[in-house]
Length: 536
Image: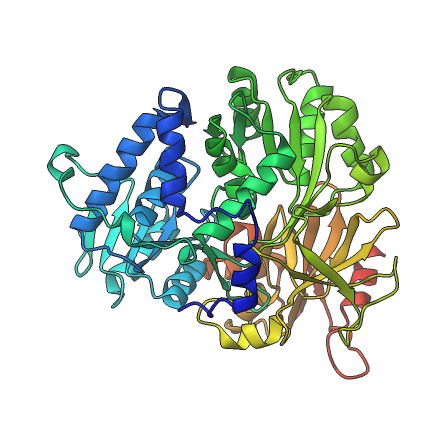
């Protein structure tokens, strides 16, 4: 299921003194034993100590076993930032099953794609009585491959075909003697699967092994100077690599701290958590960082406890970056990373210029990067080119996607990131944009074809083009140009997108009706001309 790990990479890992040869379950349970009575995780309704977390994980793991979930089974998880996310995440790995981390914002189109591409046998999710949740449930009920559905809230309706269960077991004691399968997993096996934003409308599956992700977490923990006093706010979805392990919640647990799980869609709630629990660290996308700064200026909060804010996921304007330092009086760590592996970050000792104008340097001394031209030749120092990466924790292939593996990896093992970058004279990396056609809105990445393909399914809209324009508040703002036919209106376009259950973050910020799309000399849509047209 996973491209074999090259022998030279295995040799490199074996020679690293700080490469842990253990599974994530073994690693976590060591910390649970060490930090037993401290608070590990907290959300709006629950608070678990490390000891309680270990007990909950074992009970949930036993429950999963009783439902027939076993080693190497893929299980799609689509849960909000709640303690239950981590109980399920660790419980699945405890029995050798493989969590596939879908995002709460995903609608039926993305959920179907993830389940089908990963061949998931079970689905764990949250449920509300909203129409899109009902659509997901109806599709799951008809799926030939999904055998079990576990929901945090059970719907009133009964399913016809697929077994439906509450997320948590009704009686932990009756399940305590079921044999767990944790000893059957190996450090170099796949632990869980992250999702790539994708450029073709379909997420690619990123398999992360136990040992490479532990290395990922521990490196970033060291650069964030975590210890047992850390109180971390997970404001971004923990199904994202950033909030999960860079260093994220896993880094906090590895150091005996406390992680509070919040909701990025509610800034007032986040501010309340920061003030109530004296939050010291958090990770934000630029738009959220701006909101924190504006809240300070408006006197909503002084944020006296904050020691470090990480910002990543989208372009962060230098003046905005400087305002975090000036207004919030805390350390700013710029982060550039990818779920596929390579992480770069600013570090203590970097100058103000380095911090606000670059994304730092690689997190590991073992990381290797190249900046190349379109023909994969190294560019001169300071020039812009495409970023290539290789290292002990960077993947060497996607799951079940040979086409992507041939396209996104060189024959000698370099990952072609699709990001434009330049290496500054001081050695730090500055990310300049993307080669690959991908939109980044509030840190959520997707392909324009996700929107354009849906419009082609309608009767009125034949030609459209979605572009992104720079926006200080969101990183990028999306503008949809549509060729006007048959007295089409902007509301007609938006209605059609909603009828196709497009995820909210993919809905265009603006819709422009035009007579025809500008074309390049070879007949492709000229997006540069559309940007100019928008700016007029």
